[in-house]
Length: 193
Image (cartoon, rainbow, N blue to C red):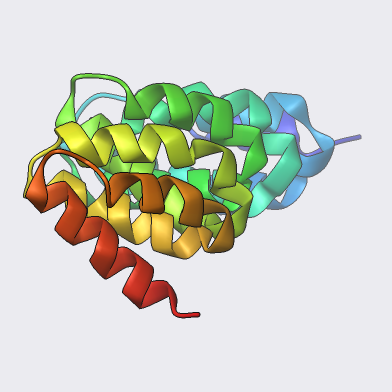
């Protein structure tokens, strides 16, 4: 018998402590239970301030689960636009930990208009480091078209990617906009030889 169904029911418990303990326990059983992953992803959508810590804990937990958390990538992506800073940070960290499993969605998010979504996606790719190399072209787009905050996050992600980002950054050094050229040159300098 598996503990997942009981723990999932406890996500609705009246006690915040019981709900939180259930999230942490589900993280441990989730690799063997798709229903546990689904329940944690559903927890991310709960409304109300009283569920704020629970949502953040579920987002953090999904990153700890690893490959089995792939079905929750879209739910984590939606958290990038949350007004709750802790939830956004947890989602960014988890998407970064999921690496290639989340990369397709993160690359798409880099091309969206929403600055919070773009910034969060770039930060998650930064966490991935070299595993995020396929996103270098989209990061350059963010860099070219974004405001200074977006430029900084995109450059940080490109630096974290390392060698695979050198060619796009060299191309950026030839951009018509001097600010783009400046940031690309700085990024190449941060990367070293």
